[in-house]
Length: 456
Image (cartoon, rainbow, N blue to C red; front, top):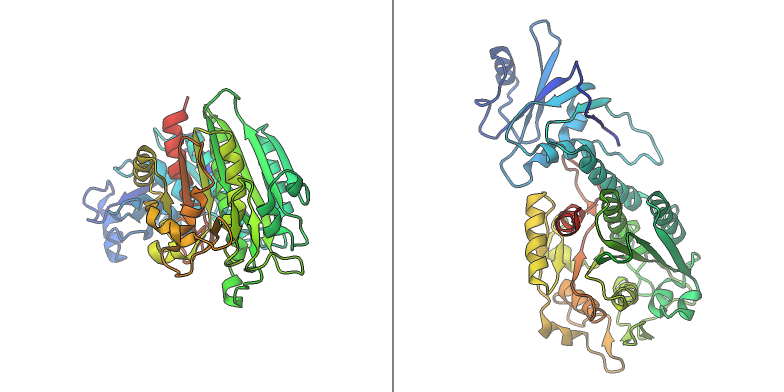
């Protein structure tokens, strides 16, 4: 991890005083530090960091502002960039010490595969009551998702995504198998094959399992479109600039799987990732084609740029055959979700009222926001086709995120509970706890739900 956290007391650790929006009144600093803060114009502004000296001019500590809004402790991620190098410890306060620690760690994240940054050398003494193992597994899951999304497709194609899944599976002694190329047709995954066959890297279905066979079954499905040209319904150049992130669902699923296995939750985990590149070639699937899915439903292709739901449908059908207790899919699926809720608030869809309440509450608790959207049944008819069981798109362009979820729901019948998350997987602007680039979304909220249900 970019910031070192230790449970060992640091003799030279300087205090970090977290200052609420209402100012310095309740902060345990001396008159000299208060005068320094006043002279520097510091009054607890959210995310602002101010180091202050002692009587000899040496570094004595730091002040950092925190807002009053939900998840404000994530704003303390600025510390990773603004604290002087050295040993530090949070001074006691009323803030969320776990979230503050996590924010500091992930706030120091930099994607350095192709260049090297010069981060500050910061060691943080863990606050009392903060679980180092939990901070570590959450940070590692987030960093894994960010790294995978940030890696461009020349180094993160379907084969590379498979390699990443294999490394994770090996680290936790999970059993992994991959169905690749024409074997997808032989084993009845025709839509995964159709979407990915035009690429020079063969499409594949990555499948790994972990945990006791008799434990409750929890299955994660992640959209792994490693690059999306739009297919023959080609995107404009501007629409392709971020399409390396179209495997963000798969990246987030792997990040969540990492957390689950590191926490040793009492469940039988299965991870399914259909990994493809939606490319253009003479054998690319076409608008107007009719594809037969694994489930047997036929799908007319209204637009080749709505490919993610096709590969997810085959993977969801496989997952559903096993009748899992909980089936979760994550995908960078629709622009409509971004129009509705923006880049930072992923919508989720489920008809399980208990799960919906648990997930909404978890998002608020751990500052990993999600928002429930409706599976509005009357809109399902918008997916009708004159030549097949259904079309992969609607013709009016309305409620695109809802109709995409309704499309996926047709492939889930046997799972006791199912939830679909339409994530963005990207920070378009810098945040206190994250640079511009790939992002983990909703996986801490999901992990909170899973820990409550399957923690030992």
